[in-house]
Amino acid sequence: MKRLSAFALLLLTPLVALCAADGFPPFSWDKVPVYAHLGKTADDFTPAELDFLAQHFSFIALEKGQAVRQRGDTEAGIAEAARQLKQRNPRAKVLFYWNAFLDYPLYKASRGLSPDWHLKDRDGKPVLVRGTVQAYDLSREAVRTWWVDTAAANAAGTDGIFADALLQVTAPGKQKLLGEEKYQMLNAGLVTLLQETRRKLGPEKLILYNGLRGGEGAQFLPSTSGAMIEHFGYLSGIGKEKMAADLDAMRSAAGAGKIVCLKAWPGFAWLDAEMMTKPHAELLQLARERITFPLACFLVAAEPNCYFCYTWGYRENDGTLDWYPEFDKPLGPPQGKAKRTGWAYQRDFARASVSVNLETKTARIDWKP
Image 1: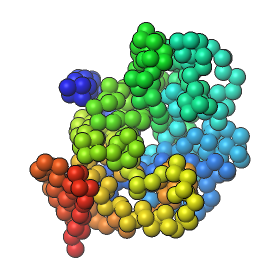
Image 2: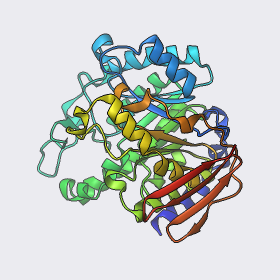
Image 3: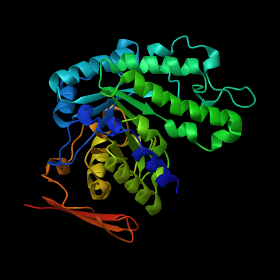
């Protein structure tokens, strides 16, 4: 019921918001539509890395910490990378990563923040995420104004922003930590933040947020261009029920005119210390062997403006600068919606036939000659 009411709200959004596709990335069914999300901490991307990204992607989000060791702050690193990418591919849409909740000390804008702008729990102690990262108190107007102004300044040199960590604000555990009144104020502040950002950026800039997760997060769609579903089939997204809910959310949001990026994983991530000791070539081989199931899931639910992202992390060595044969195969437009029987889906495209079973986690893609 919550998901239906949230999407009903989306459908009531003024028509101009739903028709603002002029600034969207170029979309085509010719091949699998893909999205890149990465950063490189040490220094700028090399010319070869920039060439690869510009050749293979027309939709790219640049992460926090981009070239921060070389340039001193994320803003300068992303500005240079965006300039180089758009020089190589003028049609590409490039986003500036700007966390909506967590104060990563990697930005020029974050230096000298007032201590009272950080969130405190009901006992007056700083709220620390993963024990180290402070959070913004979005219930404060001054914090929101600073955040929106920073977003607008950096969107000027890119095509918009990627707003991360929205579901960390809405997480039910925050109620006990903050108290009910503060929790509600924080959540109201987040909604206001996105509305103010949309007004400041204007309709031509993109606002992509993380996260849309099954029935969660759809309340943010009216003020944004679309969302990422980050943990499909992995971490918090494991299980046939959750995967089906994520596919339903992607189909519904995209059907209402929004961008949706499905972030899929090869069964491991950069957080897995043991896996990360393996050579890159071995990780890539595993990823190539395991791509069929997540890709088939994406294809049975994809609508126009849906994009597939498949890596094991968000830095340059986590798979974005690698490629998969499936991405070069002609796909063609879908020949109707997917047919569902229980947990099994089947869908035909002009140049491929796709079947997937969420219960058994098996899939098949038959590429037509």
